[in-house]
Length: 244
Image (cartoon, rainbow, N blue to C red):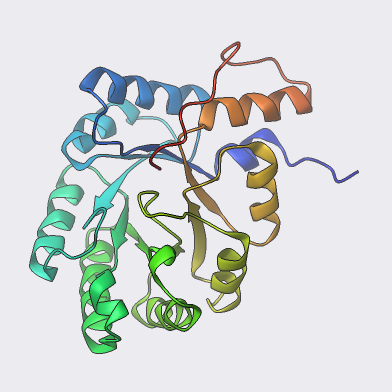
C-alpha cells in the first residue's frame, strides 16, 4: 500500500476557495478562520474581501490570494492591471488571473502573450506570484499546449485548469498535459471537481502542486483520520459541489 504523505504536505497544496459570489461577509470570515485552523496554503477570496482576509491571516503561514479578470477573462488588459494594482495594495501575494478566453479561441496569440506578459510583469513587480487560469472546458489540446508555452515565456508561476464555473473542471488528462508541456519552474494548479482526498492524492502524484477547492475540511479530516491524527473539527459535512 502506498504510504500517505504527511498532513502538512497535503494541507499546503490547498487554496481554500471563497469565490462563490453569494457568500456573505460572515461566511467569508468563517472561511478565513477555517483556512487558519487547517493551515492550508492560502485562501482564494473574492476581491472586495481580500484586504480583510489578509488582515485575518496576518502572522500565519496561510497566504492571502484573490482573482483577476474572474471568471470570464474578457476584461480589457487595463482593467486587469488595475485589479492587480488593487489586489497588491490589499495584501494579495498570489493572484489567479483568467486568460482572455475569446482571444485564445480566436488564436490571437500575440494579444494573449502581450496581455499575460503585462499581467505577470505587474504581479512580479509587486512581489507577488501569478497563476494563469486557462478554462480548459472551452479549449482544445492545441490551445492548452500553446498557453503552456506562453506562460513559460512570460514567467508565470502556475498554469491552472479552470475557474470552477465552466461546464467542466480539472481532469487528469488536462493536468498530465499541462505538466508535460510546462517547464519545471512553472507549477500546475487544479481547480473545479476536486472534492475528495483520493482525487487530490491522485493529481498530486502527476505533479500538481496546488488545488483550489471548497471541500477543504472534509478532505483534510479524512486525511487526519487515515494518518491516525485527532480531528480538527468533528463531523464535517461536504459542501455542495456547485462553483469552485
